[in-house]
Image (cartoon, rainbow, N blue to C red):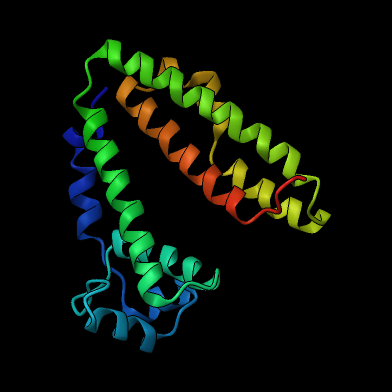
Length: 179
C-alpha cells in the first residue's frame, strides 16, 4: 500500500482553496474579520484560503470565544500549531524503539485524559454532554486503540495519539473541574 506522501495528498491539499465567503460561512466569522486578519498577517489570504488557513481560523475563533484578546488568541494558536508541527517532524524521524516508548506514554496520557473526562462530564448538563461526546467520538479513539497498532505505521499511530490527546486536553479546558 502506498503512503500518503507517495500519493501526493499533502501536495493536493495545499492546492485546494476556498473563497472568503466559503471560509466565513464554514468558520462562523465575517468576511470583514477574515480580511482584517489577512491584512494583519494573522492568516494568509487574497488568492484563496487553504485547508490549513481554515484550521487556523477555526482555532482563532474558538480562542476568541473563550474570551482571549486577538493577540492572545493568535499566540495560543501559533504555539499549538507550532508544537503540532514539531511533534510531527519528530515522530517522522523516530527509530522504532523510541517510538514504542512514546506510544506507551501517549496511551497512558489518553487513559488519564479519558478518566478526567468521565469525572468532569457528570458536572455538565445532559445536552452539553451529548455535544462533548460527539466531539470525542470524532477522535475515533476506539478504532485507534483497537486497530491502530496493526493498521497504522508506528509514527502515524503516535501522531494520531498525540492529536487525540491534544483535542481531549482542549475539550477538558471547557469543562468544570471536579471538586
